[in-house]
Length: 118
Length: 111
Image 1 (tube, rainbow over the protein chains, first blue to last red):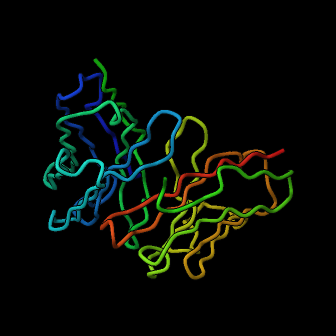
Image 2 (image 1 turned 90 degrees about the horizontal axis):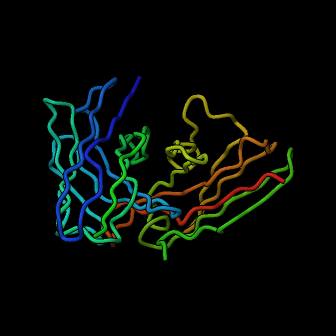
C-alpha cells in the first residue's frame, strides 16, 4: 500500500524558513516523479513544485519560485521542500503527491499545515 | 484567477447526471496535455478520479467519466449519490508556466 507521510509544518514568522519532509513507502520511490501541492484554508488546490525521479527535471509555481526548493533523497525514500522567506500567503496545508506516468497525482499524503504569522 | 476555469458549484438530485466543465487555453488543454480529475471529500486529501482525460483508476465507479475536446474537458457523474457531495478539481500541464495547473474547483451539492 502506498503511504506518503508529510511532516515539518508548524507556525513560523514571516521571513523565516521551514523545511517540509515526505516519507514514502509501499512503492519503488525512485521510479516516480513527486510533487508538492498546497491548499490555503477554505481555498482550492495550488500546485507548488515537482521533481523527476532522478532530480533532473524540477519545476516551481511562479508564486514560490526563488523562495522554495524541492529535493529528494532516493536512498531514504524521502521528498523535501525547503521554504525560505515565508509570507502570510504561504499559509496552507501542504500535500506530498506521487505522480503517475501521465502527470496525474496518483496518491496523496494527509498534508502538513504551515501557518505563517507574527 | 485559475488558469483552468471551472464553475464554482453544480447541483443535482440523487440519480441524476451532472457535468463539470474545465476550460483552458492553447498552452494547456488545447496544446494536447492530459486532463486529470480529483475528488476531495470534506476534511480529506484529494483522490484521483480520472486520469489521462478519460481513464478511471481501479476502484473508481463507472458512474464517473471524463472527456476532452479542444481547449476544454468535462467530468460527468451519473446516478448521483449522496456520497458524491464533494469538491472536484481538474488538473493539466501548462507549457507557458512550465508546470502543472489546477482549476479553481467545483462544489457538487446533492439535493
